[in-house]
Amino acid sequence: MIAIVDYKMGNLRSVENALKRLGAEFCVTSEEEVIRAADRVLLPGVGNAAEAMENLRKANLVEVIRSLRRPVLGICVGMQVMCRHSEEGDVECLNIFDARVRRFSPSAELKVPHMGWNRIGNLESKLFRGLDGGSYVYFVHSYYPELCPDTIATSQHGVMFSAALKYENFYGTQFHPEKSGDVGERIIENFLKL
Image 1: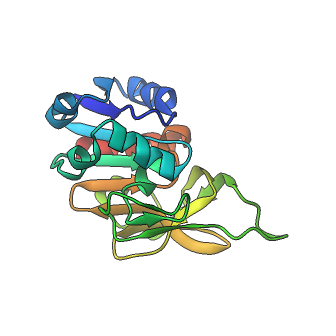
Image 2: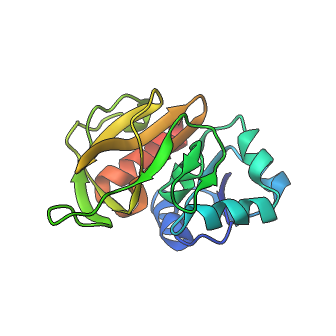
């Protein structure tokens, strides 16, 4: 069973639809015992990192998520809150990944938010089994995790940033695999096989 953590940060339906296409068994929950019992945990998210951390605190899920020993995948804001700190709301996060989340600096050449298809490279994980560097995935974000020892994929939008992170059983993607066509479906399928 896969637990999709519901902490009121949107994006649940597209993640549900991606899992349905793969024939995966899942539930949407904020219940500690269900999350702890799951074989896999997905932490999706769209929105503000400070609000996301506040919602996790209110649901008493901060220590629950930190303590998980099964594979966990954070998506977009779900990954950002697993970093050390986010400039979005100047908030301390879960401190799982050794990265800070920074805001893109907009300019005439650099549109913020970074929205649309972009390539990922430097793929260094079983999460990307069967994919080539240069594969396109879908991004929607104004903040990004800096490069760090936990980086397992990179992308570029003005600066090079972590497109994906991994620490022990925790994985994160800044992009939306559930909206990234066949490439994203392969990434989710690989996560379910970890």
